Image: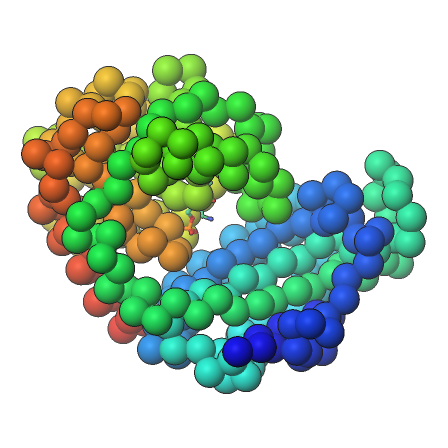
Length: 286
Ligand code: PMP
């Protein structure tokens, strides 16, 4: 099926959409993005994604091209035009096309470039991987220092994913100063003695929208949560581990650097949190 994509106010067949070669996202990775999951044709955790988009744009001094109502209307139109039942909506805002290449960025006279497209994933919430869990390897975190801004600068996370595949694993956890920061495209957690441990928020990690929701649900369910950094050795000795992201929801991790956790099977805390997250976020979907 030919997708309908969105470029700067126009809904177009994907083959007809155009962005300039001088666009700052193409030349400088000067842009930010969001990925919102869609379940049953409705947007999951949408206010959180819009709030983070606004923060990312403000951090880079890019004007937010739309208010929240307009963003919602565009997302809903994309769901409708693409008959999207389950999947994701990718949204990107770049600093736009100044008409030439220059390190100094242009002022408000250049409008941001706005692109959205959909990815259909039938049965997204019933991924078989959730039943088996994923394997991760650890790699050094050599990314830049503002990982709290969701920029399109994703080369190292892509390399990390390829390193994991080469090693026969599914993903990589990045390690800085001896402590796990996060996964290539997700936040990382371990569980020990019933306590959920995940790195505290800072400029060193992306402030996951799924993370915020999952920690809230965990606390509401009287689970103990500790926000602090942990080592790979600690993770290998944990009872269980998991990751969270908008598209993976809560995904159990059953192996770290070849060491099996919980007998190599998804643990009860991750399994329960996945159920709670899916139930609650479906309920609040818009
Ligand atoms: N960390 C990184 C580096 C990510 O790329 C992502 C997903 N974009 C996340 C964490 C998870 O964030 P969210 O739950 O908002 O998808």
